[in-house]
Image 1 (tube, rainbow, N blue to C red):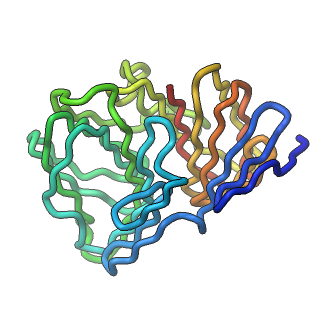
Image 2 (cartoon, helix red, strand yellow):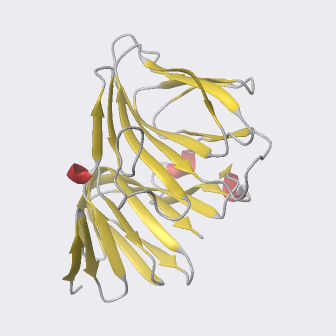
Length: 252
């Protein structure tokens, strides 16, 4: 597919394909914070990292790629008016909520908390020897002051080789976790040479975050940590060049 670089401003690069414009956010352009026990890369402005050109994408506000040392984690802290989910990539995540929920999540599992009018929670790496890695995602809810709630998504046996699986949706369809926003989130898992399509409808925007591996999106090469967005209707084609895992967000 023919490509041409059509704009470059700061760190963002827009590439025109035959179907739509892709805006690329490279892994090494993200914000970075190393606290010793926590090594975190911020796709969007977060905490002490501030970049007015990267404040979020539609309702998607935070994508943090966190690596947490053995036995360490985030102590009890509050949240409100945000839909927050964690996608475990390596190791295990132990979390406890003021809602009474407590669980240890393994790779490929998702926990989604609707903070609503206010909750507190903690997240830790329960292993004394193994590091852990997760993507922490924040999405703004459709309204403020909602009743706090909690839901999970666990892959079923048939999901292992499924290239594209719905993991979060506003109506909980197909066993997905439920979010209070017009947002659909898909887990993409591809073998080398395997591809998957996503049809972006008018008025919606897509964000793709590569967690592991390498792939091309409409012919544009992406590697682990890279993100790409599109806001023009058309077909998005993701093809893996090595084993790849990613999250795809379809947002109002």
